[in-house]
Length: 164
Image 1: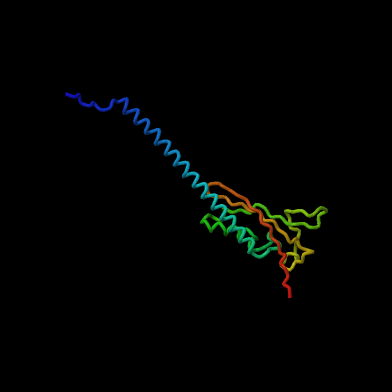
Image 2: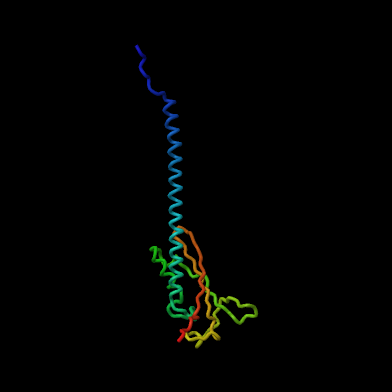
């Protein structure tokens, strides 16, 4: 007669469960890393989409000679509207800098933080000789998870004249 199989000992079962636990924890750790990377990549893509949308909106919006004096809030509402492309709050887009070109500086020109235009000069018909026609607008987009990216856009009121 054959001796009956007695099954596995307690030590063998504990070792098998421990090995399976190690394998499962490794797989779960890899899956968790993949999920986190996917979420981060999604945030990066959305930040890029909002940056692109804000730059397009800014480029297609009319030039504002004196954005700080403008009654519609200047360029801020224009760029903040881009947050809606990914259903983020408008506060995720911030205007971080507004600079004005000074062509009359002693060097090749400099960017100033103050406009220098006032009164009658702050209108759409300001000429190239009186107006600082270039503006550098800097804005930052921040995702809800904290990923942020900044973009600078130079805007001007110089349009090519039609040839007749």
